[in-house]
Image (cartoon, rainbow, N blue to C red):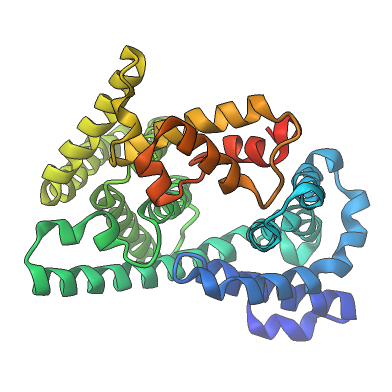
Length: 353
């Protein structure tokens, strides 16, 4: 996709779709940088892509592609029995991107849209690069002020976005570009080197963020990429690829080794308490203990209300459960479900779950 392709569009529908795709690229680039920048280009992209929805009837698996739309409409329906309308409208705004699935699918059926994934991931990776530079600046400023090694990990490193979100964004980019490199789809030598350097930075970045879900995601991504590489690349390449991945992980992990050990120990301890029936995790403030409380209360809310609390009343239902259990840390931080599956169940009951 290039700006000069505008002149190749002969119809108003083609030009609308062209502008819509550029608007979406801006939204994808803004996503890892600053969430507040996303809604305007996202809404513009959806509106500009609407004319190509007419091609949706020609697609295969139409019902499957409509599931995200049905999920979104279920949240709209959930506004009927919600009391916190403001939070409900915020939730609908956050989930607005679900409406893009059939529109993008229809757009991919057009000749101009079939290569759209590469521009999307390029824009997303540029935004991720900008976000990583901002994170590095925040960490250096923190270290200059306090002298803490913790400045290079977790929320100190990802100062503008939750570390888990940032880690997953990095995992998505790592998987895409790693797969493209393995399959030989990055043709120019300088771009291959750039993608390889980006992959190294992304791997180190996820390790240093020390997000537990991010580390799980990284492990899955690396296993998938190494398995694909084993089937695709020559053995002489594999001999250095595996050790290189381990070396990058160890070097980046050594900078934040204390934090990584603490995080993994907390997770193991929290799971152990759950199996032992030790209720002390209700008052603990570690993220692992808080997640256990949130998941437990979410399951109870789903069981107690088969139609859910309503789109905007998720936190009200969970807070009532936290108060009943005396979960002081969860009350203090006003935790959500920490799982989209469970959170949909709390909001919309069994249909949402």
